[in-house]
Image (cartoon, rainbow, N blue to C red; front, side):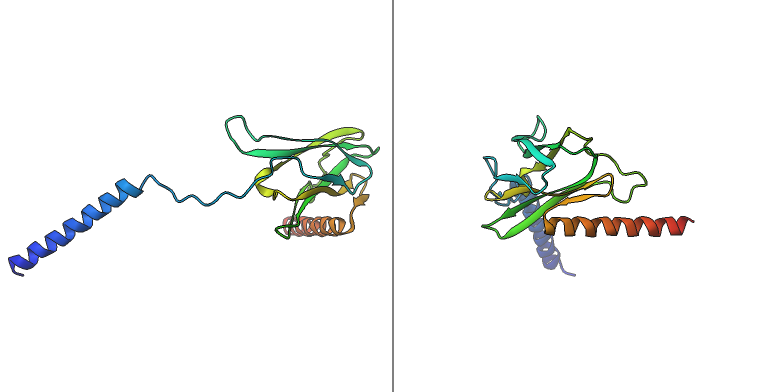
Length: 178
């Protein structure tokens, strides 16, 4: 190879290295920020489909003192004489035509975990990033320790399906062990 070609190769290689270093220095510290979803700033409309589970209070608070992320906190009063083992909280957005939920349960466990004892408060915290600004929030359904269920029809259907999946998975794992 003649010296002209070697010099040209060296120049091209040097330009590539310089461009890489320039790119790292100029653009390396900058991350592409996605536009933030608007978050709720006031309490949404909140209701309960379960007569024995009353929304005692609701408020917004920081998820953690060192963060700006907020959460919606619902304090729910179990007004029944039976412990609660599962609860479904749902939110619907008219503008975005979306529906989402948070289900807290101990399905599949040998002994169900009591979420709320009779006549006691239970606190649920939902990150605000999950809730659209125009959403309405509701306690959709609950399951009591004695197996009794209460709530809105669609919510109960989803809760039963989830419970059934956990029970099948638990049964299959026990069959594999035994």
